Amino acid sequence: MGGVFGRQDTSRRGSHGMKLESRMVESMKQRAAHGTSVKSFNSIIMKFPKIDEGLRKCKTIFEQFDEDSNGEIDKEELKNCFHKLEISFTEEEISDLFEACDINEDMGMKYNEFIVFLCLVYLLNDPAASEAKTKMGLGDLESTFETLVDAFVFLDKNKDGYVSKDEMIQAINESIPGERSAGRIAMKRFG
Image (cartoon, rainbow, N blue to C red; front, side, top):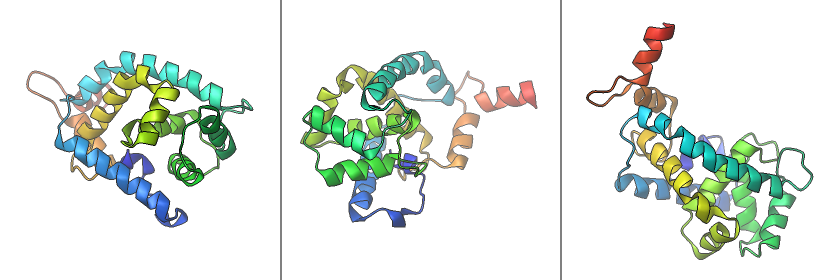
């Protein structure tokens, strides 16, 4: 999910981290080329109950990886998890994933950053990622991640693999025939 990288200063990441980001942006562009089932921001909102159920399962996975129960997963805990599950990512790949998902750059993945991590693992199309999906129990969560990816593809209006603030605003204000936009409803209620 290239957009989750937030286009931060990428100079702190090595060339492998840049490769990961490039792979994810390319993956999102390929998904965008196939289109999305999401037709409006309201349709994303309507899927919240289903997404919420899947994210609760993710919370359980997060708590299993957070060995010291401090509310975040550090790089060592992530490495331990991959080792316990016998997932064959190299130390460098694990480091790249960790750095890409440590959005706050505080050397610990909080739950929301862990969701980003799971989405990245879900989107990677290589044998190690497929193995990780199975061993981490992500197969049961496939529809949740598909919905999140569909929402991202819908929000990425210019199809560059990132979601900007302007694209979010545009998506919120869009409506399809017969539907009032969430932005216009909010303006009437709160404006």
